[in-house]
Length: 203
Ligand code: SAH
Image (cartoon, rainbow, N blue to C red; front, side, top):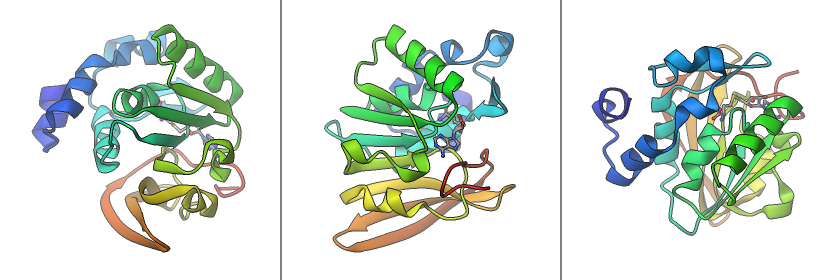
């Protein structure tokens, strides 16, 4: 997975590759998907949701440009896999999930693997998670028509946000950096994520 899917596509930071090698992706997928746990694509995790393609997890992590002391917010915990990867590279991760069974599953596996620096919250993450804001990095793993305004408000100065933005069927990865009172935007590759629900998601 690491050599053929991630390094081969140009992500070569040794620390990132080490983390992608370390986090046991097979423990985050349902039993029936086990044979494909390290395959080059997203996989169903129940409730119509998916665990992202390994390369996309690595890419979004890389785009956050994390420092070890960073405090992060993830919107869309899903399986908990992306949160585990982030936790290996940052100090604290708050991950919000709107579907109760997925939030419970993510919480269980993250706890079992000893990721005490990850906090799973059952809530509408399109509103962010005000209680622990501001964040040095925010990652949204479900697609929305535009970046939810509360997430921009909860981004620390100098912080970065990565989110798939576009239509229901296709999006681009948008990167927003907060520089003082300004938000500087960049777009990266085309992607296809499941829709964001909640107040600032799709109806
Ligand atoms: N990051 C996940 C993949 C997430 S798939 C992983 O590593 O497995 C997108 C997830 O976003 C789904 O679990 C979906 O239920 C969740 N989601 C969608 N809208 C949401 C919202 N408004 N708040 C929180 N979670 C949301």
